[in-house]
Every structure is written in structure tokens, then in C-alpha cells.
Image (cartoon, rainbow, N blue to C red):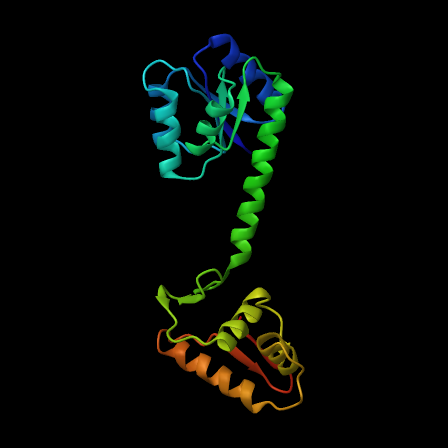
Length: 227
């Protein structure tokens, strides 16, 4: 369930936003000053922040910068300023979007939905870049494999690809042909020595870190991760 922090000092506007968003299934927390917003943000995490800039206490611009310094929580600015220079400044300061007052509540909801879609897509992309099985963690973006908290040393591209394939489907038994074609990106010609040597190297590197046997040989078929 997505949570939204509504930072707006106008009681009527804040109440209107809260009521409308809760009808859409969101959980809303109201804040009526920059100081209150800062306290709430220190204690809780939110899916999205709706942020008015003209606030009592800590200015909205300061709240905006502090949120952005600490993470990537989507921020939609609510503002009466409508010049191009103002809008550019909002975005440069870290806002993900803005809505100009007076606004239609339907537009606010639509812009929230856009930010949530982007956030979910981003999370999905990150999850695809990280594969985890038992104590093995493969990070595609950083080209590294962590085993029981320690990085696997001197990993080659083929070794990385072999483990990546096994981690994608940890219960599946892969034939030598499937593993070879994935790791070398070329047709399998029936020669198994190259693959077997790479599997042996991976096992040695794993054993240097862990006593566990992570790769299982399935005789007559190929390899899989040890269940």
C-alpha cells in the first residue's frame, strides 16, 4: 500500500487532498508546516511527498533539498508560482514533478500515478540486476558476486555468466549445452572440457570462501545449484 505525505499549510486544501487520495486507496499523512514535515520524514518513510513551498516554519525549498539529499522519494511540488524559471528551479532542486495552484484534484492523482509507475519500474529494474540464492548474491551492475559477505575474487566473464544462469533458475538442471551457449554466446559443438574447467575454477573460488557445496553435478545431464 502506497503512503503519501501531504505537506500543505492550508487546512482546507490539505483535507481535500487527503480525502480524495484515500478514496483512491492511498494512506495519507497530513503535515501543516515545514517543521512538522521534517519530523515526520525523520520517523517514517513515504511512497510520495506532496510538498507546498510556502510553509510556516522550515521553508518548503529547504524540506525539498533535505528529502533529496537523503534519498529518491518522489516529490511533487504544489505551487502558485507558474513561470518557466520557477518550474525549472523546482526540477533542478530535486522535485520530480509539480502542480500549479489552483489545481484539479484529478490532475494531482494522475501525476501521483505516474510517479508510482516510474518507482515500481525502477524497483523492478534493480531487482533484475541483483540475483540472490542462499548466501550467494550476484550484482550485474557492479560485476561482482558476494558469497557469505565476501566478494568472489578474480571472476571472469564466463564464470560470472555461468553463475548468473544458475542463479536465475536455482532449481533447474541445466545441460552443458545450455550453459555453454549462454556463457560463451556461441553454438555448442559438443566439447565439454572448457566448460568443465570453468566450473572447476568457480568451485575452487567458492571453497576458498565457504565450506558449502553450491554447484551440484547431475551426471549425464549437467549442473545446477545445490538445493
